[in-house]
Length: 559
Image 1 (tube, rainbow, N blue to C red):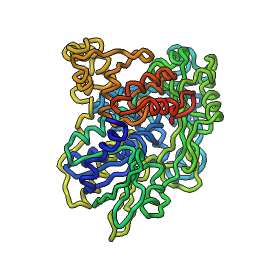
Image 2 (image 1 turned 90 degrees about the vertical axis):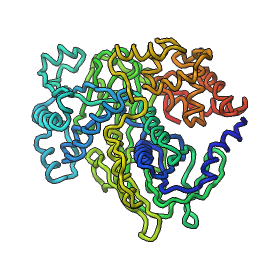
Image 3 (image 1 turned 180 degrees about the horizontal axis):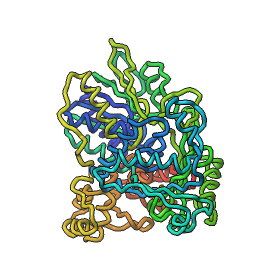
Image 4 (image 1 turned 120 degrees about the vertical axis):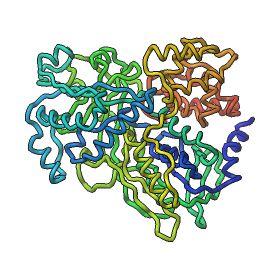
């Protein structure tokens, strides 16, 4: 097939049937979670995303699945409780991507924050937060234990004094008075987790359809104009309910639909990924959760052989691109050096940096750090029009509960009842995932007839039990490991392109694989990948060359 034929074929079912009970606009984690939930209820649902799935705010996370111990100070007890419950569910439902993570807070004072924190808790005052001292952190972690122990499976927090803290983590600043250690969770590859959620919805049956690179451009005669961002084609689409899950772009999407809303006022958060073995080792397989004296949070933890450092919390204008600035990098480096003063870090160790905007509710002129991370659902349209539900807020950890909540609101509008709960359902490759090394070895031996057990194990750890689909695709064919990215093979990449709605090279390096995140990018890598993509996507050499030049391989940005 030619490129034009491939692009035209992807919307064939939409042209034949341009209607559904529900249209979801926005393919970030909350959109795909709502899509999955509604699909499992048997609802006719279509999801559209103007770019690639999970390429906006959901792609710019800190890779954390956490309760948010600092939210307790803002009185967000409900959010923390729900977040911890959802964290525990994800550890069970998606063990292939969500793992427990030991987290340590270095503490430099005893009494700091004792006055300001209660004032914010009980009066919701808008003053700047201050560094939390040992007493305040101890109280917070006692509550954290109460909500999040998961039947005793998650260890209780522990406090260590100066001497024991230094013995356990010798590189720490000598001025550390205590360390507090507790457990949360993290995800190595959030984009792949989002894809698993999406594919669960698609697998529910023909009632569920999803399309990336398809924008909700406008409303016309009571229908939504969907514009193909690959070809420019427009399709008039009819839905009984519209759900807006476009995160920080919610107001812009509503404007396209004909509504003037001012729900959002997101803040920018940036991160850098460092290749620094000394810092990696000093983190000791744990997250370091550190507070600046102004109360802002910096975290660092080892991930995929590198160290992730973030994040900032800066008001942002959605009309401007979100980029990680030199000032933000300097801020990170200054605070990392404060925690680990003897470890040298430099900008030439940055292998990747990225920035995104949190989908926070408009909250006036207050400190960004105290804006609620909770969510709400707002009915935007007039009673006589097609109902439009706008999601305001939300975070990665609570995506399943949020999707269920939003889905339940839609079911009420449709006059339907829930038939399935997602609370205990495994996600994607988390189904029947073996969680012990011995069980993983046995799985690999049982499924390695085509690729060998060592290769099967690598695929299992990369995709969960969905690895079987790739192994079956490879079959008796001879796969060749890529010359410039030897952890991937030509047939593995071919499978991803054919089966995971890949239309650009950037989709592949940023979201179907972790090549960009880990700094495994070069012109040679991109050329090799593009050559594999040519056949399934019908690219000619000119298109392939254009795709390679369109990916920013210098350190600096997601494209």
